[in-house]
Length: 193
Image 1 (tube, rainbow, N blue to C red):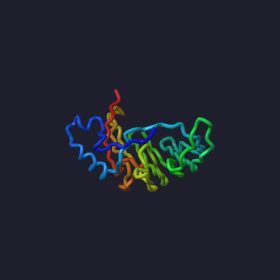
Image 2 (tube, one colour):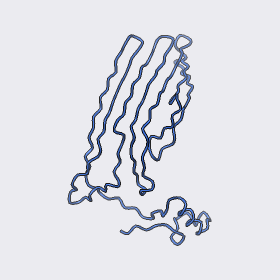
Image 3 (cartoon, rainbow, N blue to C red):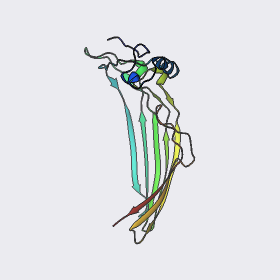
Image 4 (tube, one colour):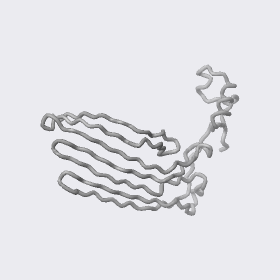
């Protein structure tokens, strides 16, 4: 089936219904990464081999302190020979996820106080998606530091806490289509009846 693009002569179904002029569609298409496909076909692509491993440990350090660490590695995907009913996986559509991820942290939990601290590292990646090559792209490696502190009140019936993600306000984009994640503060009140 040939791929057909939307244009002022072949408008998307709701364009005219919205009362928008046809010529405006060509301007939007030219300035926003068009042409935009009017037909999509999903194909049964050939197989990929993904490989990697993950290691992790959680440990109670004292009666009030616990620690955790985990690491994962993921290799580059490998295109395998397709079966008869498959099409070879196009190399231009491969996603290269972060090769390395590392998380380290500690938690403190007593009758009155609680808290946590963690460091999270994610390596660089290359993302593709349903859209064409202009929308594919890399994300940079990033490290975030997160923490929280809380206090229990009224014999543990009320807990208030402050949580901060990305304490040092690093510019983080986890996915090429994702939002930029900056420092985030949360206040939390938990009531235990």
